[in-house]
Image (cartoon, rainbow, N blue to C red; front, side, top):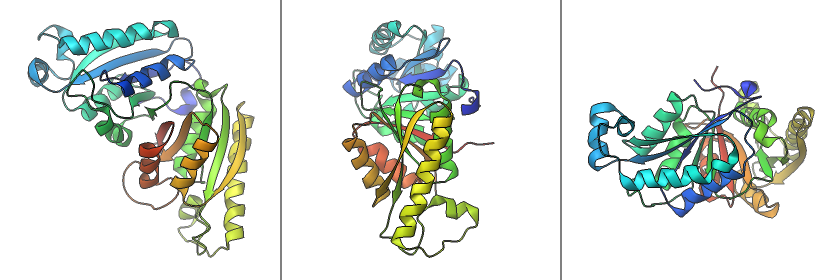
Length: 307
C-alpha cells in the first residue's frame, strides 16, 4: 500500500515510465523540473513485451532482465541510461529497471512493489522500444495504480488547476495538493463547474453522498453551491500554506475545465476520480478520462482514498 497524502510531508517515491518517445521525453523533463523533497527516489522504468525479455519474464517475473538471466534489450537499457543521466541534476536518488510483460500491468505491479507515491507517464508515444506505447496504457495505469498518476504534457511545473465538486474523490485530490511538498510554491486555482443546463439538480457530487437525493435547484442556486465548494476548498488550501483562490465555471464540467486550463496557462490539472464505474457527477471516471485525454497540459489523476 502506498503512503497516504497525510504521510507525504517528507520524501517521495516516484515511478517514471519511459519508452524513448518524444512524449516520454516530456515526462522526463517534467520530473526534472519538479522540486522533489530531500530523500526522494525516482524509479525510471521501461517495459519490453517481446523477445528475450518476454521469455525471461515467463521464467522470472517482470524484472528478470535485472538479474542477468537473459540478455537485456540494448534499446531499453540505453533509453533508461539517457533518462537517468538527464535526471542527475534533481539531486535525488535514481533507480532504473527494465520490466517485462503487458506495459500497464507491469507499471502497476512495479508501483505496488516499491510503494510508489506517484506514477509519471507520457501522454502518448511509440518510441525506440517498440512494445511500449504509453498512450495506450496511461488510462489503464490511472485506473489501477495504487497511487496518483501524472500524465505529462508540459516540460515545466508552475501553475495548478484543482477540480473540486464536494465529492470524496475531489477531496482526495485536494489533500494531495495541500500536503505534497511539490505543490508548495505553485499558485493553485480551485475550480468548480456549475452545469446550469441541469436546472433540475444541484450538479454537486456532494448531494449524491450526503443523502442520496437530488433536490430541485435553480441555475442561481447551482452557481451558489459550486461557489461555496470552490471557496471552501481554497480556504483549506490557504490554511495549509498553499497559494490558492476559488473560481466557478459554468457549463459542461470537462469542457469548462479544459477551457479554463488553456485560458489560465495551467501546467497541471489535478482531479479526483473513482477510476472505475458509475456516477455521472463532475469528477466521475468519464469526465476525468475526457480531461486526461484532451487537456492542453499535464493531468494528475487521484483516485479515491481507500481506508
